[in-house]
Length: 573
Image: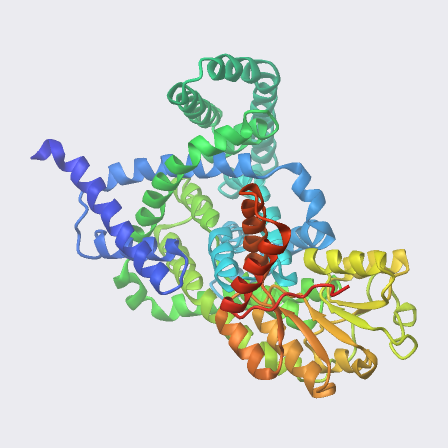
């Protein structure tokens, strides 16, 4: 039976991960929280069901390498140009500010050494991409303003991980040898990068081209794995982190023509090993440690949440966004990220941090991940309440002074567009082509700057705020179009707009039946579901392939719309 112990241990871990992930999904939580909690349950500090911890740690290390490899495949330098100023500038400012405040807190509150306090600041500067994406997807807010800001900051954070891994050995160096240690680490990284770039430019395309020409998925996957682990082993030889090597080789492959197929082949394998990684992290958490050191754990969690919330809130405001957006961004980025685990593990293995410090970071990370959905929910509860409050003084948009913003009392705009995302932009372009006057209300200052440069009528502000809506004189508007992907923002906007003008015609974007029923009860008759409209377009084109006439197709679509109680907004002309 002893020979089957490794298989039994892996089976227990994967089964526990499945149960934990299903429970977390049912509770509408990120599945990695389920993985962490079942890791606590089956680990040595729980029921002790898994005996071979060394095997799980080896498999978890493979998961780390694959995580960093796919991170390099998924992130391109083009994304940095797309995230805008708040992503690049705000992301860098957030990392530096959080690092500085974490260092101060580590010295003053926890009385750690300078290296320990600095390492604490480094760890808490990262947030969890997986947790944030899951929450935003569940709430339907990926395309919201605060969702775009959070994703932009997370992209910059993820890119910074590779640089942080190079800097880890510096924290363990004595103060007098700090400069030389840093120079050696950078020198090793540059030497490795140079060798890898040479191989990436001349060897990798030829190798992958020859393997792909065989048309064997097994051989292609095997080649990709060899490249990933080979790069990881290369950095290990150079005395650097294996995660750094895996990330960089993924970044090189990202720019090749094989990137998409590589990501398709490697992702399922990565997900399995990443599951083992998160479960193994849960195994490291000792409930007894949390109970015995509860005061320190609570203090650490409060300090982390306070620092991250304040930094993210202030930076979002400094880049010209409103208080509501800053509140949601701050609440969504309060947790420590999964890559902080990798940094902490490297620090522990390198003797930079103690076992007590490591346990404290693990406990704090898991707790901050668990409370993030609660904070986002609390921010959502406050959202409509704050939206009814006076907006107060608005921040001046870069390139858009208050005097240069469109005065709402001048034009009798027939259409007010609330939100200038992809949907709002298409609507505005169509109205412009049809020469129908409109005014845009948008909280993204960069978009407002673009509109002002084009000479478009626009106002900077949160359209769900009653004060902002009252400034556009909705009594003169014929139609108000609410395009927000955030259902809470849609409901708040509709309520405040109807308070100002009960007779206003409102066309609102909706995603789920729950919001649809609420909006109809408020008096909104025109509801648009982009997903549902897209499905009807698919049906129209499918029926056309069957030879149906345009009139017959239109009757069928109208019947479907009537059955679903979703009214189409169309031009009667």
